[in-house]
Each structure stands twice: as C-alpha cells, then as structure tokens.
Image (cartoon, rainbow, N blue to C red; front, side, top):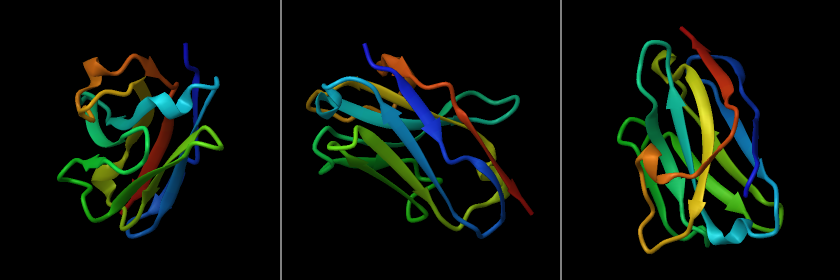
Length: 125
C-alpha cells in the first residue's frame, strides 16, 4: 500500500510557474512508476506526465511538453512536477498516482493503483 500526498498548488497568473510535490509513504517508493494527472471542471481526468522508477524514463502529454518537467527523488520518496509558462487551460485539480514499475511507463489512469487527494492549480489570465 502506498499513500500519496500532493502539495504546492495555488493561484498563479498566466506565464507564471508552480512546483507540485507528491510525498509517498513506505519504503518501496523506488519500485513504483509515478504519474501526474489533472481534471478540470466538467472534463475527464487526463494524463500530464509520468516517470519510471529510476527517473531515466519520462513521458509527457503533448499539451505540456516543453513547459512541464517531472522528476523524482527516491531518497525523499517524492515526485515533483515543475510547471512553467502556465496557461489558463492548465487550471485543474492535479493528482499524483503510483503503480508498481514495469517495462513501460503508462499514461492511462486505469493503469495506476494508488492516488493522492489532489491539489488545485488555478491560472488566471
């Protein structure tokens, strides 16, 4: 079992930056692939970024590629999402998710087993 707690959300103007953190419980963090997803009001949850257990493999949604960076610190049991050049359309609740590592870093929410409670990100125009 893994418990995930997100932090770092807030209100920011368009063009600004935020850094989300997701702290995981347990001593097996380094065996999990980690993902970030987001859900805007009235929309389905969508993939944002994911990272393999070692940090060497990363995947991004086209909508955030070049603006967002996912990283992890296995010594701190934490995964990060650095969000730069934020746009109003990035406004959503952002969720951290975990799944036991496999050969492929997955980008669909049903493939993830553990979820955080979410953190709100609001980008004003």
